[in-house]
Length: 308
Ligand code: RIB
Image 1 (cartoon, rainbow, N blue to C red):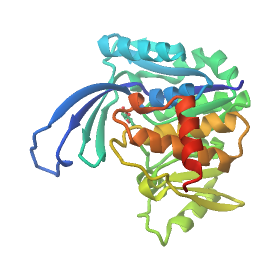
Image 2 (image 1 turned 90 degrees about the horizontal axis):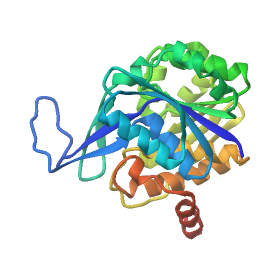
Image 3 (image 1 turned 135 degrees about the vertical axis):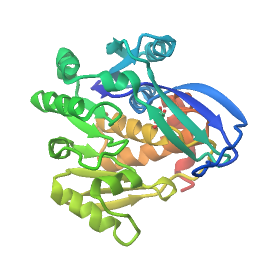
């Protein structure tokens, strides 16, 4: 079995159930509040692990209750946490407004995640070397990601990059050395510096490939996703469902995609499976809480495959 490593963030999500997403200057009352284990990195690690892969994570938490809970959560999932470093600053926290349609906006206090240094990464080189695939997001410092990508390349580890949250001037080294770049629409806008529309999406993707991206997978919310590389492109529809909470949907999609390519599926086969996993995820509340295990995902895939 291939080994998948996630290098990225761990956050405690503080989710406020709100009647609508507040606009600038507006004060509203939340209907409910909950704490859930999250962080794009940890969510992706849990998504991958629940689908059955040998999974490890490198990241940082604070020396506090949230940090202990997040670490325990990963261990309970069976994720190798040898790469998790305890820092003196607070554990990362994400403040999530979740509306009645399952839509959200998120503000992340990065905390310990942003204390993860290139030096820390070098101290964990053995874990990277032993991995086959490494998944990244950008809730840790860019120079840390860059150093980790450099070590991945040194050891022939495939790089899956989720540029979230997006950085306007994402380092060319990261762009040129990622085997897969997986932004959502708004992240692609920031990466490309251009407002997206149905008319210019393909042109913008073409420019990104010319700029050095190898395989670009853009998640387009309820419009599905787009797979684009130098050989062509393909649109992939979503699997419709009743949406309860979109938190972690992208993470489940990326996790499932990575899991499937690690099992030898083609990119398009992997994207096909990933959309079922994302559909199951949005039909439930919470980030990690909503991620399906392999049996659930396989069953959902089998039962709904013929209806599409
Ligand atoms: O992708 C969803 C995640 O983004 C949440 O769990 C939150 O922690 C933020 O990092």
